[in-house]
Length: 341
Image (cartoon, rainbow, N blue to C red; front, side, top):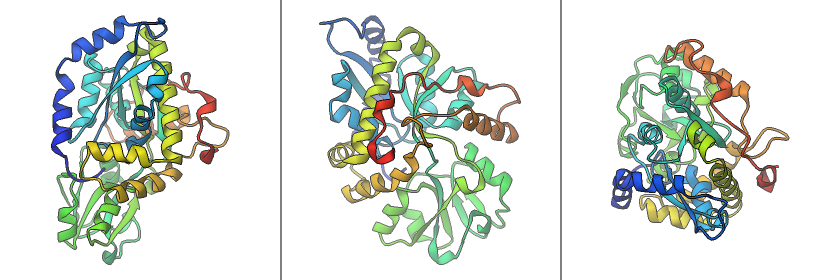
């Protein structure tokens, strides 16, 4: 997740709640199978500024894959607070789809919001802690005597605080920027491995990435999510959105240039060089398990994450069922990118 939030995104994000009821009403009244009815509109909210981790979803719109499915997509950029806001918008029925992470799905379901993951673009978490190479840290266990900028109420941060000594580490709020990292040698921050480290290096820094997954916390990321009611009431819409998204990811991972140009229009802080780097660096994180479809998830992975969040005390044991957190039923086997097979 990168720095900066251009005015374009602010304007688009502010539109999230304007006319929501009308869009939702139109999408519910339209039949995605009705010939001659025109494109069926749907709303997809991003959980952060438009970046590499959203590439496949934006590609599905840019390349016309959603249109080929008879859909008209409205993709709504996010920003600070969006990871929680998109869940609230789903719960209110003002959007039908959002991008989220597996830990947020679990916490939403514990709170009574019946969110369901439909496709996991990132099979491995891109979450890392960006440190200065000069600091000499070789693993997260080595972190000490620094300021650490992170969202400390997020499950990954709680897991770090539970599992790491963090001797002399002062946790400060995360603002999404890399400026403070560049100015302070005794400073680290949360990041996505294919985003902030490249930006920091591009601006003269010496970033090193320490992966949070190495201490066992590895939720699915860049999830396409919806609600149980949308799945039940509009299964054809869900099927078409998932199909378009799978095709979008195939195109983005194989040829990201056109989509990256669109991402930069939406997020002017992202350079083409940073986006190109991110698309390439993201590929290993998208690899499905052997024989699996692109975006497919397993109940065992969800059960392990639920167990971890229970261990953190964020949810009570038995509050959330792994099998109800996700659905693979709408995935098309043919839409796994060749480079990932």
